[in-house]
Image 1 (tube, helix red, strand yellow):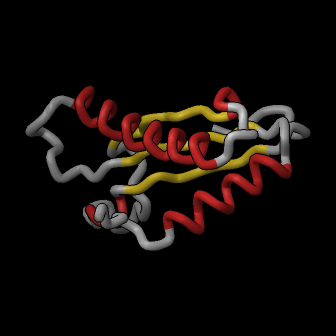
Image 2 (cartoon, rainbow, N blue to C red):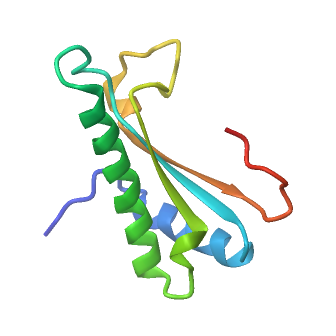
Length: 113
């Protein structure tokens, strides 16, 4: 049996699915992040790819669980190590390996960057 990295995954996926259904035309951005433990040792492009794969895995999990959700409602973004979870503690690797999900209702003229 596969063990989930975060025990809250099922709850979070459920909540995102509800939000996506509630805001049918909402734009949902899934950002994958990595830690900077390998900075200077591996190319940044590989880290970007890893973080994008992380975001896409979450997107696929949500779309698979909720058949009524439109896949094109989601954007997956690989942020890499450029945005630490806590700028005051940028070396907190466990905290920096994460996925953030942002839901922007259709009424919003433009999603913030």
